[in-house]
Length: 336
Image (cartoon, rainbow, N blue to C red; front, side, top):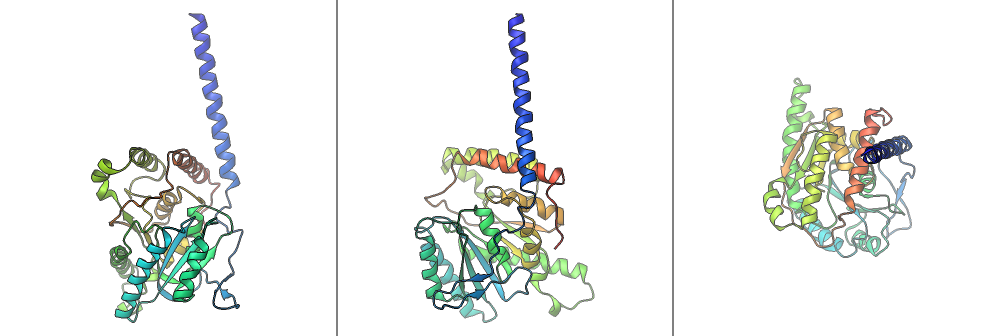
């Protein structure tokens, strides 16, 4: 009996050592990433394949030059990117032909792809001009979160939409997010500027965020989606609730829109670079009191997903870093 008690005590001691060891690693890594929201590699120019002259790279702190920017992160998307871009450009060009006040750009961020993604992207630049499609190559893979952050920081739109390169969400659904943002922004503007006239309103100057959501597909998805994706989704929702709190049911849908003012504040503060940057965006929206709306979008599962069972420990790791980083004050909030 004494042997079993001793064994249990050693087991408990081992668990305590492992727990505090893991906590120490998390704290050290959170400290090491305390400045990860500051760009080390600054993008100053963009390449135009039709000219030898570099294009000056805009910044989120500059005045808006377009109405809408679409940011597309791409990592080894040579096969899926062309169809998604064709559909996107067809929609944008059709809308621009019907509405002369509508202007747009598509910003493709090549996240260190080792296939023909960069070539495909520049083929579209040649076809549609560098004013309508731009490519930001990151050189080495830095993660989806960092790719989107770089795209956001170097876009020209009053409204900025992030969307996946696989075309899983119909690009036409951006109008749902746009309409909701416009409604909320006008309400916020009228509250804060009761004496101002409607003609003074600029949507890009009011902080609002809109999250595309697949939550309405949950019941159907449980019956059709692969079991490990269901497991991932349910477990992740629970951890997100603990880390960022309630508010957004589907944080991971890759279809989100921000006003320029909101994007400037959020993406100059985001620390996470890969799996859980979406959750950090929700957390930061709450910290900055930026209004959030969640809108149902059409979504379909496209073959070639990069989500796997290995995603689970990566997600938990980044959520742990975020919780420790902000709760200890190591990750500072910058007012922009």
